[in-house]
Length: 482
Ligand SMILES: *Cc1c(COP(=O)(O)O)cnc(C)c1O
Image (cartoon, rainbow, N blue to C red; front, side):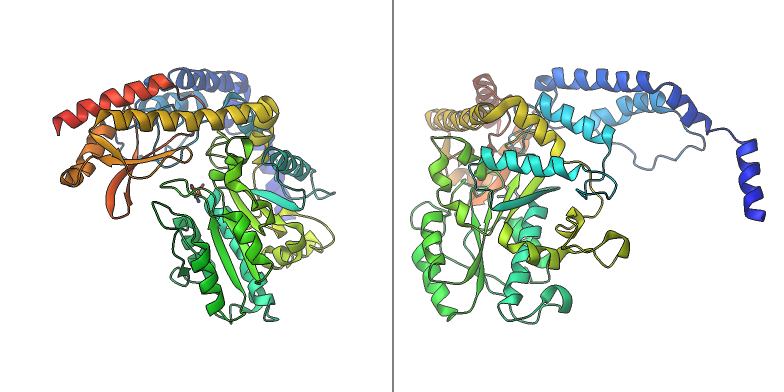
């Protein structure tokens, strides 16, 4: 009774909070202003610096009553926008950083607006997981992969590697009749890999396997990061018939090198292993007739990691995993959330929360769906081939300049280079700091074969030859001053 009265009194005496009410009345105006803001940023991307020195005092007090969105937008403009760098712009060449196409932005916005919780396909409160199925199906067509892969969306390639290696861990236990997901790891897990991305190692740590518990296989001779198949087989033989997990690479970050997937496929005929491929960006080689040879044979893998916020040019956070359908029960054993009785039996009712790390998720497939339909196979083939052409062009300009040298051949879209000559090694870091400080370009440092180097990665759909010219001029200028 008391409780009921409280409710009545509450609604009699109170209206909606005034800031919320005002925003509700202003909805259209708020979205319109946000849109104008977006257009301003996107149209000016080429001129916005790729690095900023501005900072903020992060101890801002929370106001008692709300300011309303329009006032907040103003504060955002004054205080936070100065922190923003042109990372979706054409000269942000650090890491492997994609931009965002109009279609991907529209899809991403609408994912927020529709705000679906992408879990189920049946009568569990929505059918938006069907959009995720359809998008994965479109991606398989783009990448020329068979339908025997099932996939889903996660935040990035790190979480995709985690998801795939989590299922691999469960598979490994099963080879000994054990259920690691239920009972913990009770057998040392054998992992073989040549040039793993740091995020795979991080995944081994998160999965309780241990970030040091892997065997490093030699790379092929010459200036390569690909696994040496003979050394791989030698190490397999040392395991004396025991199962193992192979983490292989389709596109290493320094030199975009690829393991030889056809040879690895042949090894599968003789040995028992889970084959994972980290193809975060390199998988997109499949889109081009010219470069698809790099991934020949990859369809035989058990699991594949691919990022969308890199070469697909959709906004963060967006990646997917592909895992062979035959492993779905292992995947459910690893990620099932079925101890919540209202969610039903995971084997009967498909629900994404039983096959990947997160429970509630946004409709991450939507920006990808928009992009794939908007630009089609040809659109992405053009982005991929243009990026590679730009990388080669930049490489040529560097060589011609005599001040720089390439540390590795340019196989795909990454250029790994340094200042020419060992005497310049101590200047590399200072050169890069000063170059990045110009705000005209952003690149990241690396070490390759014990030499300090710099990486430039071409991923953004908006980069042009003119950007290369601008950057080469900056580089000469900065070098002349150090
Ligand atoms: C970028 C990258 C990752 C990590 O991806 P995130 O999206 O940053 O989590 C993993 N592997 C490779 C090869 C990458 O290039």
